Length: 194
Image (cartoon, rainbow, N blue to C red; front, side, top):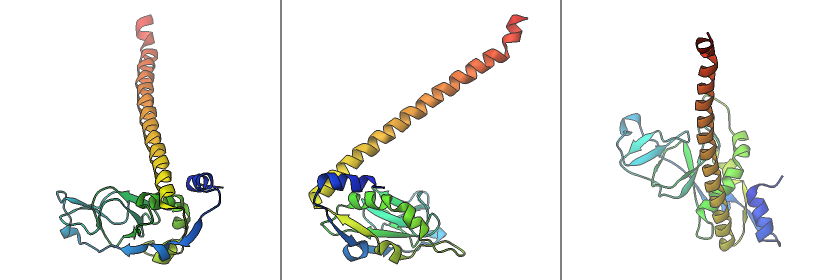
C-alpha cells in the first residue's frame, strides 16, 4: 500500500526517483545526556529524551530548530519535529540533512516509517533502537522543488486535519453537555409529573 509521500511522488515525478540509504545522505547524530540536576522548568530550551514531550528545559541548545528526531529509547521509533531550538539528549537521534534534502520532507518521510522503526527496537532493560536501523532506510529523493511542493501539500493537509479534529472535539463537547441536560431532565421527570 502506498503512503502519502509515495502517492505524491508518483503524481509529481511520473518517471520515478532515486532511492538512497538515509545514512549515505544524512548524518544521524545521537544527543548528549543531561542529569536531572541540570534540567529546570524555567530553562529556555526544551530537552527531548525518550518521548514526544520534553523532559524539562535547559539553558543551552545543541540542535537548531526545524529538525527531525527519532526517539531511540522509551517511545522507541517515534518521529518528532521540533520547530524551536532544543537540547537533544542521548535518548534521541537527530537527522541532519544536506542542502538538497528539505528538512520537513525528511520528517514526513520518517513519519511514514514509524511502524517499521518501532519493530526494530531491541528489548532489554530499556528498549532501544540502533542507529543502523535508521541509516539503512531507503528514502525517495525527488528534486528539491518537488520535495518543497510535497511539504506544502502535507502541511496543508496536516493543518486541515488539526482544524477538523478541533471542530469535532468542540462538537463532541456540545453533545456531552446536551446529553447531560436531557439526562437530568429525564431523571427529574417524576418530580414534575408527581
